[in-house]
Length: 410
Image (cartoon, rainbow, N blue to C red; front, top):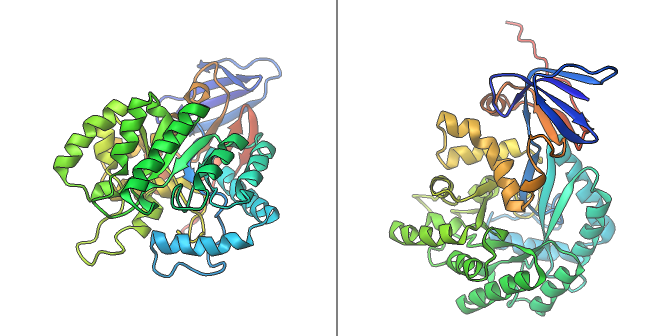
């Protein structure tokens, strides 16, 4: 197959791409071969597929069941979900996850990291998601995090549940230090989680300091243990919203440790601007980690959706465009180059977070997985909310849309 006239990653010069056996064989100015299928993009933007760095598939589409989160706080959300967990069945999870995965696919996403609540003696959600991961592998790569929503030490038998979930097949070890009962539990839970990941050769993704409390400093423990255990960029700190409350002198010292540790960060602009600042009158905090400052220090940051219509976030449609759009605003990253390159927050940066960079990207020899947006560059795509025209996965077409046409009659 020959893809003609593609503007690859904001390039101003169109190129052609030849695909054979699901792989990019050639990229450049190419001649059509006999009987070759040709798709002429006519100067549309071609990008590697989008990556969802952080979502909770097991909780999606449950908002209002059995109750809505009226305060909009993280902690009431956890209370609402604790009640909803009592109604979980395998079929319930399967039905909701299948709907959300198709929403994601329509928006050009081909890779998902999902946190799965394991503070449930039956491990119902993890068992079901592991089966779905296998069933959906031809359309979506799904990485599963064993996520102790109600704590490792602060939930009955939490340690063993985390071990069991990892032994069962979870790809990533999770933790939630700011929700543990005490600071001592927080540190102990992180030591346990990272040592388990080291022992079982797993990645790590910690819900870290998702709170407006400047005294919540799980991040320094995560980074220190990542450094000491040699886990480095196998470790991700998600949320880290307490960083917007840290004093600058402390952050200056912390940055040195973060760079040494090489850990990744995931910010979730939609959900955290909704959840954070709930205890503020005015001034009211924005509710997002120090994205711009972390990137300036060469630290990897990607963006995630986090929640879709669940107790923590009553909206969401699986569009990472919305995530990037808001994230650029609240992080004050509105320079032209920052906007143009912001696709990297949900592509290459996210691939590094998920540890899939080796087989990802628009290069010869790599799997022919890509998306096409109805725009000439990512700046235009963000402004116009350009639809995904095509999504190809290993040379196979997953999604096809027609460009929107609009007539203004005045």
